[in-house]
Length: 182
Image 1 (spheres, rainbow, N blue to C red):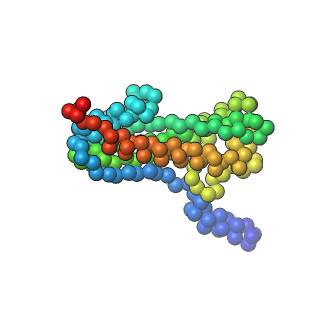
Image 2 (spheres, rainbow, N blue to C red):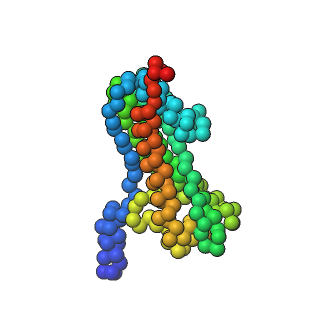
Image 3 (tube, rainbow, N blue to C red):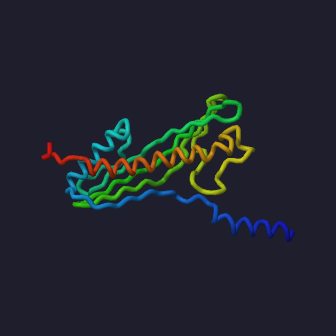
């Protein structure tokens, strides 16, 4: 009984250290553009970065200086005996702007769907959350997740993609010409 209580107590103490946190990217920067110029450039960036701006934009409020999108990133890795596992990660991007300043947030990153292309199995909402120690798949889950050795590769691809989006947006705003400069 003492061992059981000690085990439960240990789990309760250590769980917060390894629990999933909402991983976020945030960039705030000043730039010599008006709110309208930033809004227009952001709409163009969304049209270039995502396949269909209509499909990803969830909220578009020019007056408030806000655009919110829901993106999807797909990453694949081969697993045991050549099985191909595909993970579709959903995420939110919020763009805020006012005269001379913008803010970009990426948050709510989660695995919306995983697919095993050998067995043809689909797992909607399978909770494969990134970026936290202890979230790696274990051997018992190999039929629905890739082997643990591949897990860091998947997480690095996802992280690189989202970081690149933040970097590309910043560069796009700096290089975007105002409507009078062409």
